[in-house]
Every structure is written in structure tokens, then in C-alpha cells.
Image 1: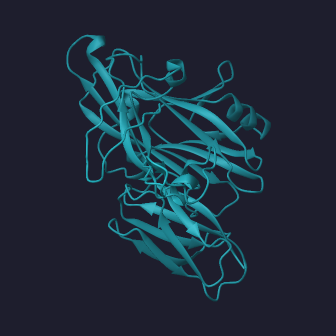
Image 2: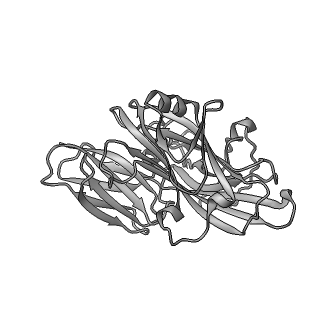
Image 3: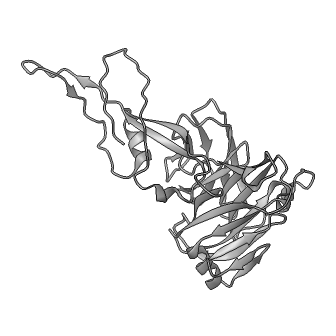
Length: 337
């Protein structure tokens, strides 16, 4: 979608613009509500020198780079963004909630990974609510399944189904795929589907579920390599199957909402929000390659940037882990020279 408007200095307006996806089938595996980012280019028109008339667009500070949105936003003040939620306006358009996601190795070397699906109640047994009594989950990915089999088919807490390359998790304990080999840059597209059980009472309740990725050869107390949390809300507004519903929300700190610079660094590194619209307190940890905590800083939700002193640390590869208040996190590789 591309729309152009012209405003005089000081003018303001509310824009209303309809939008439909060009290929709706691409969204079959998405939730009814998805997170999106709206981009707008604000162009300043300046009068050219005499004797020419009219107005001309001011040049961009740095030429635009195709396909790298975050870099364009950082490099040019005339591109702005707004995070928003897009909701499917057709009730019942999807038969059940699904989420599309990627399991990836963003490192420059190969690793074995553990993939975990776990409920908040399993982590905190004093929490109420048993998801396994009302629903179960299905994780599907042909690429992940093939690599899991080739890596020895290790793990527990699930039933594997080779006919559709899926793993079914009952919802009560921990599901864990172990030692899945991934080359540097590997990315496995997957869908995670939550399904209500048939012919069981459905309480009006909400459940928190976490999908986590760990580097297998790291110590057990090493933070997760990646994490997505899901809030499942189940409702029963009547006695018929059609009145039962399972809604889903998804929360995370996106992997690209912070800039880490300079990188490589020597005595200090800066951590900056790449999008000012993301407002959450964050804890910033500098970890050694074996997961040991070396430095820690706090970034207030009203602050845009902070720094971390790295003086005295030996040259090498480190991990910057940024944790939100809700436990979601993102990781970045930092090189000290």
C-alpha cells in the first residue's frame, strides 16, 4: 500500500485507509489478531532557487536500502513507524487459533538446540488452571522434524507424528525436543496450533504458555536463546460446540527493537531502542560465552538509550541479553576487541 498526501506547514489530519492482503491464504496460519508495523515517509518540500518555480522534495540523508526496513528508519529522519494490531474482522474466519513463527540459528557457527513448550503452571505449581484438561498444542514444521530425526530423535513430553511432521503436546508437563542440529543461518518456519478438547467443560480462564529455544551445550542455568509467550483465553458462552472459543495473544520483545553499538566495541557499548514506540522496562545483561553474568544495566521504560562499561574484559565474543518485565527476551552477539 502506498499513499501520498501533501500538507502545508502546521497542518494535521486523520487518515483512514482500507487495506486487504494481496494473498489472504498467506495468513491462514496466523492468529485472528497480529502485530504489524506501519511505515510512513514524511518528505519535506523546499522551494528551489530562482528562477525555478514550485517545490522540490528534500533529498534523503542516506539513500534508502531495499529490504532493510530497520536500517532505513535509523538512517533517515523522514521515515517514521507505528506499531499496531491488525484484527480479522470476519468472525470465525479461522477454524482455530494458529501462530506462525520461525525457529532459527542466528549465530555464525552451528549449534544443537533444545525446543521447549511449557505452561506457566508447570514453572509455578501454585498457579491455578490445568491447560491439559481443556486443550492441547500441535507444533508443525517439516524442516524441524527432519532435523530432529537426523539428530537422534531425542526428547520427552510429546507424541511425534511423522505423517504431518508434527509434535503434539498434552499441556500438562514440559515438551522438549533435544539436541536438534542447526547450521549457522538455518531457519525453520513452523506453526503452533492450540486446539480445544471435545466434550469437556470449558471454564472461563486464561493460561500462559512459553515456547523457548535453548543452546543445548550451554549450562542448565543459561538464559533462553529465544522466547515467545502466549496468553490463551478459553470461554464457554453456552452449551453448544459453536459457542466455545479459544482466543490467543502473543507477547515478546522483538529481536530487532534494540541497537547495540559500536560492535565490535572496546571500553563501552551503547544499547538503544530502535523504535521509540516500544515502551517497557528492560534489564540488560552481558554474558560470557559460557553464560556467566559479567555486567548488568537497567533501561527504564521512559529512557531511549543506556550504556554499559566493558573496560577490562578480554577480547572475544559475548552475548547481550535484554529481558522485559514479563520475562520475554532477545539476544545479540557482541564482539569486544
